[in-house]
Length: 128
Image (cartoon, rainbow, N blue to C red; front, side, top):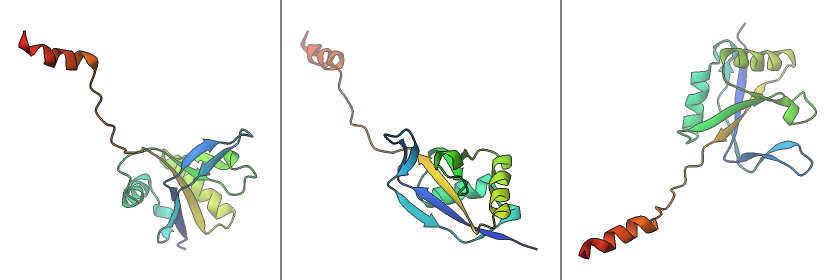
């Protein structure tokens, strides 16, 4: 019997530690994708979805177990096939229809070039 789960991605925000010491995902957007067959969910397919969201680079992916009371307790690094199996098993064992992925992504903001004082003095000394 085929079982399908809806991948739900949280992106554009950031993982932060609040004043009470608990971690949260602040800001960002939520994107749902078409259901995936739980037997065929793999890391590469999840990375394709991350790229479809517009992120060419990311630092880390996390899956969240919604059965945990505290957000941070339910947050798990998603790196290997074993992590994906654990995520899918959690969903199946708790009759969940979705799995939740949090994207900790690189912020691609151009950094303005800084001219150092040594490079400006060497260019002005060309009259010597």
